[in-house]
Length: 255
Image (tube, rainbow, N blue to C red; front, side, top):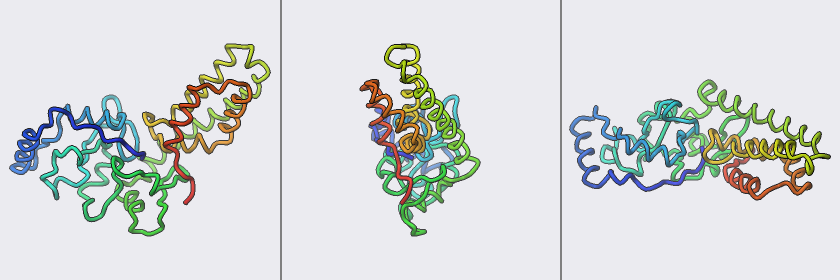
């Protein structure tokens, strides 16, 4: 879960449309009045095609997209199509959250709250910075089942483990190639391009960016690889921007 910038509501969702759809829902709460293509598309754009909670990819060709009502529609029907109440979610997070009353027992809203203030990451799991069982961080983990082993942790581990292997292989190769990096274009490009691809795992458009950024920037092989490229004058402005962009999503790894 990373901080998300709330974008403007779709232009089709005018005050008149919101009133009509809200009235329809109040008359028949079986109607999915919020399930409009223009709403779904704008929400996916806002979250870079990811579940706003667990950061897995959703939408076409990925996991099914659900539209989550941060404040549940069953308790707050007037907010059923209120833009600020709508969030893109995967089935797992949406079903886990169900009709939890976030007004009286708040969980993190990533369009408002910065998850890094509440969580640190350990062993591909979210951990609450507060040990209070009733803290917002702890409640968010429990309500969304963010540490479900099969649905969440295993997916993060598989991607993160491959990323760590790639970091090890790339640094080892950079050491082997170092005497030729300035004169051999093919070998130089191989190292630089792989480093760039690794850093892209930590930017906001990537799946599980919070976890991947934390892995990258805590990995000794990455730190040494960066130092090697800097020493040889090969740390470009593009790599530096990717480094800085991915650092924005890095979490603490302890309280």
